[in-house]
Image 1 (tube, rainbow, N blue to C red):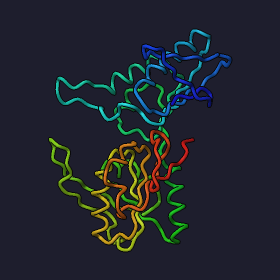
Image 2: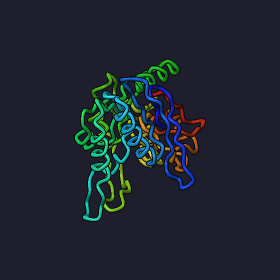
Image 3: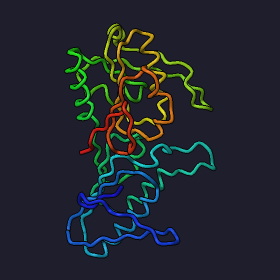
Image 4: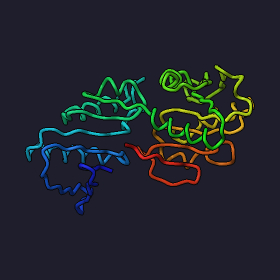
Length: 265
């Protein structure tokens, strides 16, 4: 979904399925918000920006909470297409006055996109922590599923935490084991909030929740800044291992009784 100064842009199509866009230009300063749903929106964004430039708009800001293509942040083989690099190049060519994002999945994207403003997920996680602590009248224990998440988030919150050390099969990416480290003496009978940036089917978090339950955790919750709709196809939301998932509306567009969506601001 693309918004122009808060108004949703309708993306229409001609009979040959090419884009049909209409936008009257009255303002001198424009903020475009892009809540990514599909790749076609990138083409629509490019066309819209060119239209605005031709009508005299000089300052255009892009507010893009989720960075598309951030998963392809490196190449291992000659045939791998470095989509994040070329996506960033196209965004830079549109010359936005600034590009605002939320909790980027990759530091590579931060290096590639010009005039980037990064918002951390701190205020959203704080909302969840406050809610969970009021409900149970006890302190929440944070869990970061890997060293990267621990490095990103542990200094944001004055809370006790534990973190995971994963061992993966290099070729398949399959998790072979997970060791829980940190203030592990606080896990027994605890209310735990897992914190990370992105979730697809939720395999990492399912594995983490099982490990935490074995160590005595009572209730387990998950916060991810960006939750892909494919979470509904995985095993994470089934059964009673996980109480609830909290996420923003950056890319999640579905509904599920175990998923609570926080409004991106």
